[in-house]
Length: 231
Image (cartoon, rainbow, N blue to C red; front, side, top):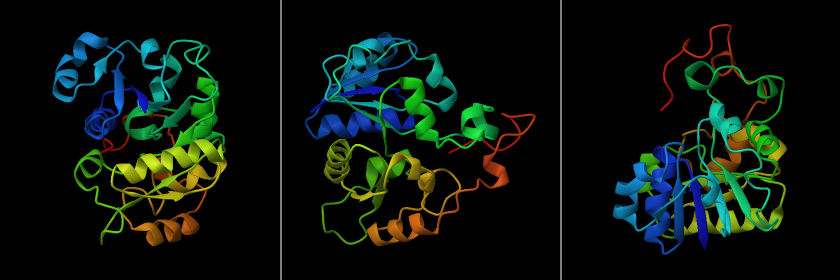
């Protein structure tokens, strides 16, 4: 597939490495410009591009930037992209640790539903509940004992099926986590978050999740900066 990655932090750079190694054609962008990604491009064979160019002529685009920077993306970023382009959101809301208060999320929108509204395109939620090191190193062949499973949520069943196949390619069991309004079940603070469970464990953890955010995952008057930094 032709894949664009917006964001070259821990998850973005890891997906760039893994997906190029699997033979996908990857374009990667960040907010500082393609010149800052020369090393990653040389290492992986990915193409360093501007953020708008990461969306052009792609089959799938991964948006993997801090929640607080979603609204800083260029206006109309996906306006010219065909409807068939799949958009994957890997983000998490860290109000105390990084992002500050985002009113839409605090008032009850799931993180990815809020992202979807900012982007103006449907999104699939994936890769948000695993540490980058584990995403890089712990993929296993299908059927292997101890294979980690990852939840994937979204409203477009065809798009979700493609992302589930990509998860499998990367060496993880994909678990259909329902529609995007159910994606709160894989947000920070839920049983599946950073738990590295197998498929049955992921299904069980999703079913046991509580929708109300615990206090440490809600904004305060001094957010950000009132809690420890996220992993």
